[in-house]
Image (cartoon, rainbow, N blue to C red; front, top):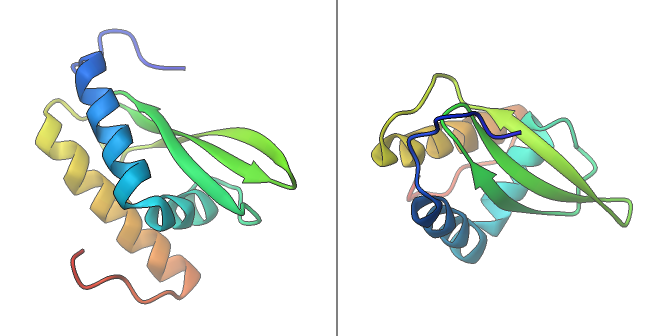
Length: 104
């Protein structure tokens, strides 16, 4: 459930989720597997975000499961979203024993 008073407009949420789903689908899957409590997920996409968490839909056993993963801190600016997603990706790689991509 999105938090009330999120500083991110619907346009920002759409832009971030589209970018993550178009350019970072595998990263999103790793994040959901390692940090979202769905290690058996076969696919995942970002569906939303607010100042306290990212929201995802993960494919688990043929079913779509809603996943909400809290940020490490409350976010107030758009630039913080990227930093937090990169942090989560690196943490997910470490937990899963996967080598992170060079661009991260």
